[in-house]
Image (cartoon, rainbow, N blue to C red):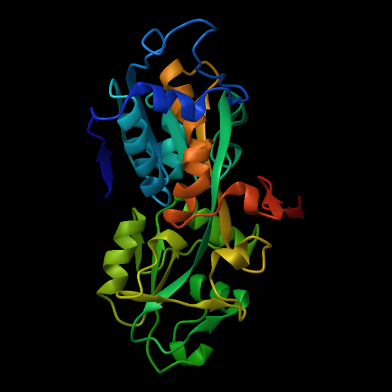
Length: 308
């Protein structure tokens, strides 16, 4: 789904939703809990939360929003997945409450804009190269990927495949998925190469790759679909969540949800919920992501990876 407007749910009580996030701390955004002696009705959440940003983990945010609204029927959560750059700009400008991003805000915004935002790291996701079903290549090194995505390698026969032109499907500039992929493949020296198409969203990559022979692109693991295309190894390492947790598979990103420092109470409550056991305990993995707590390494804004 490329745009999302959650319906309000009326069948679960408020008390269960408050229990999901009561007592949790949220640095910089505060928490929403009932004062001592107050009733659940006194603390009832109302209002609207809006978001935009990375399409890579929009499905996770949608699923969590659905659950949150079930518990809080007077809350509406609406949003879209128009790319990390768009989401970060929107939350910095105040046109949405939350900006979802595959990358740190300081990599996309001016320093003074990024300084007004509070980061919530809600999950980790692997990202990897995907190829058309007819492509016989099932493993590429980072160096080979760099050759393909810079336009220097143009035929599959150059990397052990059939004699066929490689069709490169890229994401548009501003995409956090593109930024993550390019940082892993090229480092700081990213070439100015668009490929044959620059696509808006992860869903667009799924659709076009599934109908194009001899093509290559990249997607986050949650968008892998082996009925339409093939995910391939990188340097002999399978693209699995297990291999991401220790950086054996080198292409991955932390999923961020940013809010303003003075975010309203319903926005704070939803962000607390994203960090609660209700989401981190099961929903994150069900949606194809990795809980941050399972990672044995961390990555900073410059892409440096260190052990926890």
